[in-house]
Image 1 (cartoon, rainbow, N blue to C red):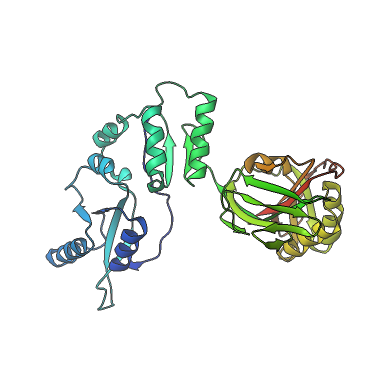
Image 2 (cartoon, rainbow, N blue to C red):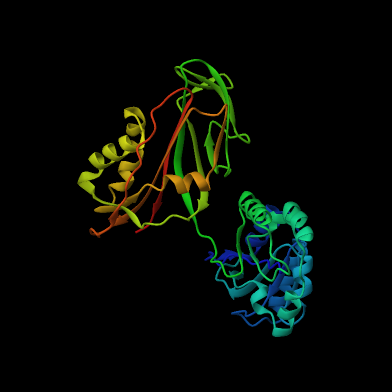
Length: 357
């Protein structure tokens, strides 16, 4: 296969060159290579002297367009940056730094063919991703000599998800992500029971702190974790946006509360849980005249697997996807499956994602 290190295309603010270099050098902790191509400013002796002094100060390697082999550089440096310089009115920072495109886009046809010839076997790829994956922002897998098994493919994508790398296979669209906002998890049991609960997607935020999972005790009054009581477990996460709006509901602002009370009861939330849900989401939903709403509960359970020990007798996971609208549209109604009756150790979760209109 071919492993291509590509930077995500993103807008960047204009920063003083010194600030940009210092920030990157300390944040990533790896020696960097800077190329200066397609500059807005003609690089004379003064400009090149300025660049050279900065590169020496921050221990960075550099070259100008045409002075280096991008294929060799791609092999040797974890982070490739391409920059342009502009004049500044600030006497303390005589030049501004502009982010351009990664060097991979500046390849000549011959250099590109040479890069494509650097194929990695599965055995070579796996340790590379485990050891140095954090230096990749995006990986595009193409040109496998032999198809991966479903097990290997799943393991590869799970590893990329774990390391927060966007990844896709040849012919597949690149993944987009969406925030899983304030999922909370309640645990109930009549008698005190120790538990351990883990998520298949590591949270970006959590309370109490997620330490490769949560471990504590379920009591009639709530949860006890490290001698402190909590009403529920809270987290947020970034997940693939694999949801769709094929079916759902279009709800006017004034009907939001009655709609949620009705649907959440069907999906299995009790009055307290429903109140927690509504008080969080109502201010967000009320910003729009209408909202398109669907409950992709099964999709969320697939994207964010939840495991609890001991095994829950009842598991209820409610997830809402919403999108603000300026006016009503027609949608095919979604049929909601009623939740099971609660018995024994019960785990209940609610959360949601919001798409911009």
